[in-house]
Amino acid sequence: MQKQNEKEKSEVPALEASIKILEYLSRYTSKERSLSQISKNLSINKSTCHRILKLLNHYRYVSYDEDSKQYNLGPYLIILGSRASEFTDYLKLAKPYLKWVCEETRLTSVLLEPLSNDRLMYVAKEELDLPDSPVQVTVKLGQHFPLTSASFGKCYLAFLEEEKTNEIIQQVNFKQFTDKSITDFETFQESLNEVKRKGYAVSYEEHTPDVFGVAAPIFNPYGNITMVIACIGFASKISEDHISFCGDKLKEASRRIMEVIGGREPIYKKI
Image 1: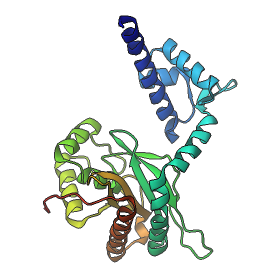
Image 2: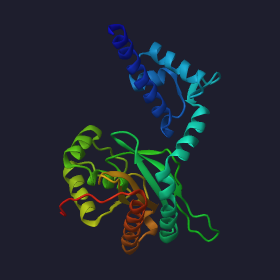
Image 3: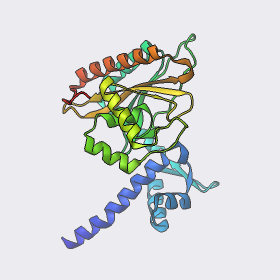
Image 4: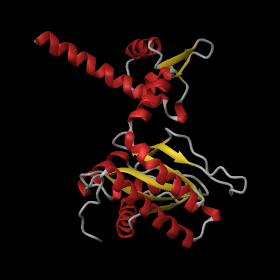
């Protein structure tokens, strides 16, 4: 029994390090990195990091370029991603309403899920594909954002329990992406209260210059927020009236999605 416990203790950190490596290489800002960069940025012992990368490369979870001496995500993850997409029924159920939002608002629409305790990730998208469609924001599935940034994060945090929200804010803190980013707790808290009042979140250039976002929550059968549905576009081309229109459409889409997945809104005090 003691030997088994010792084995588990040695294996779990290696598994955790493997997951961190895959998550790190999945970011667009670090999609190709050398052994030294991965080891340093993730605080993993270099020899341990090398052993893990060698094993991941063997099973094609990562690829290694002999010329550049850099690692990136491997081809087997495409198969896993495809299988995960097939098995994730709720995304299939939600996609028609995502398309409906895109057509109604004439904006790029997206679904996001928590990637970890501190980030949200694009898991589905709809973009207009018409000859007369206006210039639009395009996104990449898998891209992720800190929970304290933009409409997506504000929407997600607003509908968590207050204790959990404060814990995440303390852990993630605030980052200055643009000169309109919210970087203090009091202003951010006021913003969350406004999200609760309206039922949707809005951000103007808080994460990316000239990009706005509107986001609404989707709750699971237990009344816990599980996804965020949003639309995004260019801030210079939007009006206040259209923002309100988008908010209403997103709330309607959220309600319809919850009907098909069995979700329900939580019982909470209106602020």
